[in-house]
Length: 168
Image 1 (cartoon, helix red, strand yellow):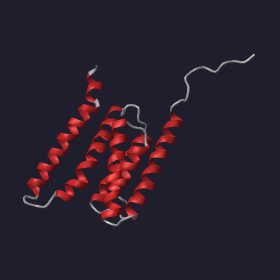
Image 2: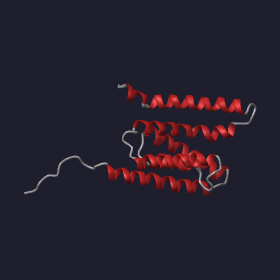
Image 3: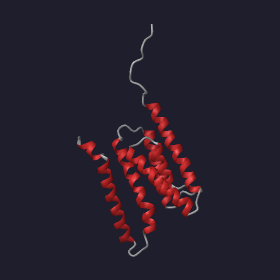
Image 4: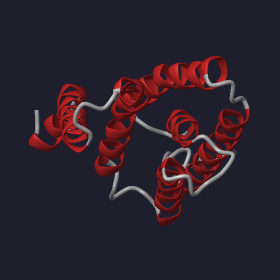
């Protein structure tokens, strides 16, 4: 297996994700010693799996990505992260990112992990926190952005490279 292929192998991605999670836990424990962080960890740690996988997808496909697709990726991730600072009202950043990761072309690891985590996020948002509005807005915007990228990609990639057959 080539070195570049090995680097993007799902086990490598999951190992790096585990290191990212561990780093986050250590940093939060250092930043808030003695703080009750279990709720934060329950909400933040799971999304790290599809997020890191998404970043690896983008890195692996970077040369093939068009400017439009890269711009949509950056916008979705930026809005999702800005939501954590309260700068974007009425949209769940988690649901926006996760639905986008599911709807756009990507690896099986990214899509499956995003699908699993989105169930957890929707459960927390709707049943525990009684917030049906932000997940719905995130769902609509994430699916819309993913479909736009899929549509743009299908227009840029030729459907068939075989020459047309001439009829007599």
